[in-house]
Length: 318
Image (cartoon, rainbow, N blue to C red; front, top):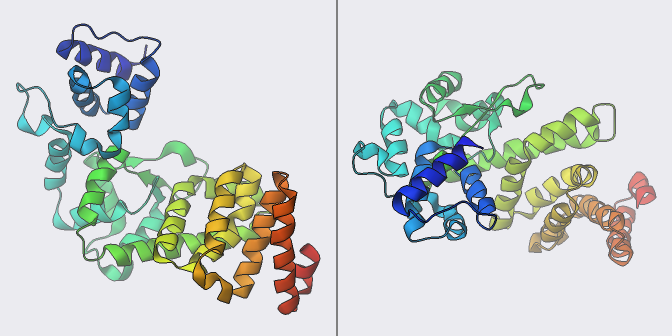
């Protein structure tokens, strides 16, 4: 009954008259439509591959969707024959500063607040325009969307559809400012995590849990970047600040994996206060999933560090 499913089925039958939506392929077709953000052109281009690939095979190739979605109807404008051309056409209509902002915003995973966009993308006036004006222009060009998931939050959020973000990330890869941009992204979300940490046991817990949930993908990206760089200090600081969020929200496996990876970085052994905090988090998460032997090991190491640091409250917690 969903229009996106109907569109996929109609276009698939246009290239393969034997195609039928069945119990076996319906889940794959639905996931294709979700992964393509419901974009009609993207769905049409995916369905055009049905003469060669089954829905499950199409789904498996969507990690690089701009490469896959390259054959459209020949009786439509050239810019609509591939998804890349359609996005590029909209991109080319932007001014130079707006293009720069569009590319920089791709550093955010799962969207961002306007405040974060201003801090990360418009640092030191390097953008050449007001970030808020640029966001308005990108919204008008349909290259950015208002994110309605945070209607209760004061600071509005915007996001790119993942299909469009893939195009922007390709441009970011060749941008000389990419590394500096990613560093500012990490710094912003490390600061957010640190501000949230002391609020996760008080009367503002629910509000801060919601904020962290909205930024879950960005926090994950900041952690991943820290791991890639071998930056133990940032990785441990993020883990130490976020473990209670992972615990309360039920992200136990993910939280445990991040903490274990951060603690295993070579430089972690030289960062006793952060390591003690991360060990406390890892031990608490392990205890919560009833892995008591591992929990005791982590907390014993935390206890040793707390005593070495003369941290009486930390000793008591351990």
